[in-house]
Length: 84
Image (cartoon, rainbow, N blue to C red; front, side, top):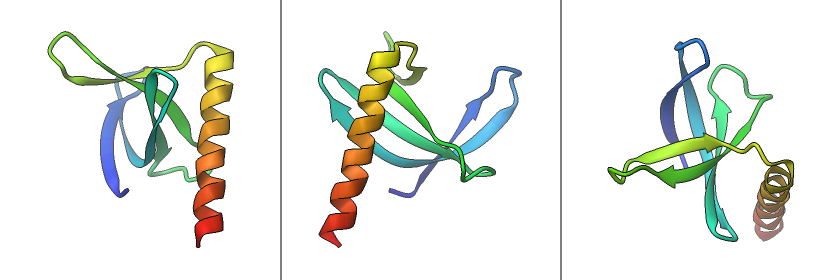
């Protein structure tokens, strides 16, 4: 996946991200984002839709949900490496 998106940080500043992957886990879908200017950082955000059916990326506040999402993404990476 080679999609890029622009999000606003907490100060209203635009930041560009590469969408590295999207995946489903349980009843939710997630996006893995890498900041274009910092390849050592990654974010996993939950994908939701608002009342207008517009995609909204939401931070994961529940530690268990976040850990499960991280483990799922790591598993996907491992599978991709093993298939090569």
